[in-house]
Amino acid sequence: MSGRVNNNGDDKLYPGGSRGGSRLHNNSSNADVHSPPKKRARISTAFIIGDLEHEEDYKTSIEILPDECLFEIFRRVQSGKERSLCAGVSKRWLMLVSSIRKDEIVSVVETNSSDESDEDFEDDGFLTRRLEGKKATDVRLAAIAVGTGCRGGLGNLSIRGSNSERGVTDRGLSAIARGCPSLRSLSLWNVPSVGDKGLCEIAKGCHMLEKLDLCDSPLITNKGLSAIAEGCPDLTTLNIESCSMIGNEGLQAVARSCPKLQSICIRDCPLVGDHGVASLLSLASNLTRVKLQHLNITDFSLAVIGHYGKAITNLVLSRLRNVNERGFWVMGVAQGLQNLVSLTITSCLGVTDASMEAMGKGCPNLKQMHLRRCCFVSDSGLVAFAKAAGSLENLQLEECNRVTQYGIIGALSNFKTKLKSLTLVKCAGVTDIDVEVSMLSPCESLRSITIRNCPGLGSASLAIIGKLCPQLQLVDLTGLSRITDAGLLPLLENCEAGLVNVNLKGCSNLTDNIVSTLARLHGGTLEVLNLDGCCYVTDASLVAIADDCLLLDDLDVSKSAITDAGIAVLSDAKQLSLRVLSMSGCPNVSNKCVPFLMKLGQTLLGLNIKNSNSIGYSAIQFLVGKLWRCDILA
Image (cartoon, rainbow, N blue to C red; front, side, top):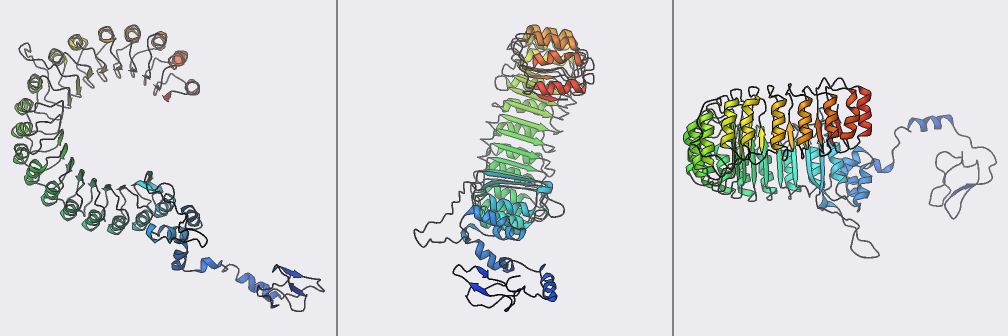
């Protein structure tokens, strides 16, 4: 083994050589040379063993440096790409590089030229990153913080869930805060280890933040939210859900420091009360969207909304157990909701007939009204609301069981020229009645009616609707198992404008006769037809559709009695250009339909043949291979 010469030029040998074993020279290139060896160097066994004993402890010199020294080195690396390469060496280096703020990077002046460095950050913030479940860790956040800085800057970060063993903590969020000043949107859902410290770091480093979404964050308190309010004055959207430690103090800080706030959603936060909500509504004058769900607020908060909500266009109120009739009544008579366009109220016992009329009068520009599970609203309240709400275009009633057919007919006759869409879902009070409608004014403006899962509604009601609403284009009667061909016929005959979208899913008593009539009367306008669950529909319906439907784009005949012959008829219809065909659960369709589906596949973009057990696996694989433009569910 040859000895080694140090770079100072002397002949001192480093361990591994012998003075007398060979003549050593240090040439001009500082290379080690030995010539000529007289005899082999004698090396002791003890020395070799000692060398091996210390081999595992051997580290490169830079790794011996403490974190403080490495930090100073890394912040002098000018290029973002080079810092990314450094971060890829080890977890330690990654965490150190990710801890460097942009303003801590030292600009090194080149000795031979200008003061410009090669650092070219583009903090436009157009990059989006989303972490879910096991992928949500501090290490990944650190990598994002380092890697996005030289690629346009991180603009949107969403974290859903967290790794159970090494999930996201304040440390990971701090890395984002230091490395991503361009962050504009932050969403934290079910990240239980993140608290005020991480949010305070975001407030210090991400002053451009515009949207904050917090859900199931038990460690975040008023302190963290207040820090965001003070550090991020450009905040426009704030969503807080199931955050048990956030209350009035945090919301008051937002109200004071965030003048650009436009949208607020607060849900299931037990510490939020009237003081927090009232502060937001009275101070945040630019609020246009407000959603309050399951909060311990009272009539006072609704009175503030009614008085100060001059900019509000969309309002959602849900499960407000402590709000009584007076709260909703005052909200209406305060006359402050002049610009309200959409109002949704769910499970609020304070909504009564009197408050319905007040809200109708106090919201002159209201176009959409959605009532869900408001059990004290009856026919009189609905009719009074219809008379007062002169601009209403969309009315939805769900599980409002005191509303009957009389209320629906009275409302339709009073809306007259504005209402365009009516939706009834699970309204048990709507049942068949015998009413003379000849004296009532028709609702010429109504274009869409949806009646889903109203078990008491049958053929008589449809006949009345058909006479009152002659301009219908969309009819959705999902789950109305009581209606028959005779009951649906008057509705089809009275639709003068021509039906475009018809959904008869679950109308199990309908037959080929009514489908043929539908195709004959509205085949020139019909684009979407759903016959899912109409078990008496056979190939005769497909023949009528093939003959008369010129514009049909989407057809669903799942769980019907069609066969291969019916599919063959559809494939031969030259004027038909189906894009979506659903025939799930059709027991009489077999492998023989494959050639016909291939023919239809020239235009198909979606095909559903799930649970059609007579179509074999090989046939399905053949279709998948050939119809490459078509999404096939099998």
